[in-house]
Image (cartoon, rainbow, N blue to C red):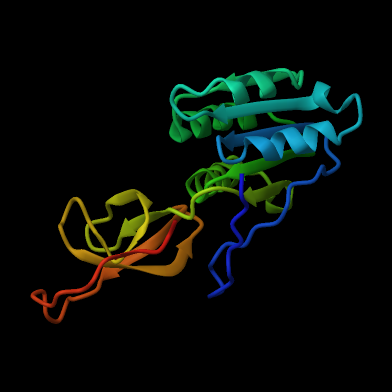
Length: 203
């Protein structure tokens, strides 16, 4: 599985590193299919007693089973695979509400998963220094239409069309940590008849 390196652009643009174990009393991992190998890599390099303190939430692709088996075989204290990222993040919120001081959170996978996981961690009061992220897989973005506030998932084109208000949106690099989304603004507001070529750029 190939890694995708994110270029820095503006200050709000999130940047990611490589997951590594941080000292903690408990370790919470959330990954999608793109990030599963990160979790396996970290676990296999960890001390023997590490997995006794590990909780894993995993979002597989439909019909996939090999990575579920591999993650389960790591022997985490708690392991669950979820149908969707939203379900996994909701479950993460439940787990973090019971977490003790000194817990660490590891997010691995696509930007949608990472963004929603970071937002949930902040909502639960987890210090930002205890949140570790590694981006893997698609560069597809989660975008908020600033005009009608619709959230658009898995955006790969520039510009993109809002499914609610039908405006053609320029996907900006401005990122809201609170919303876990990039901002989309109308690209042809002065002349709605202007034709703008749509290209797939977030692959």
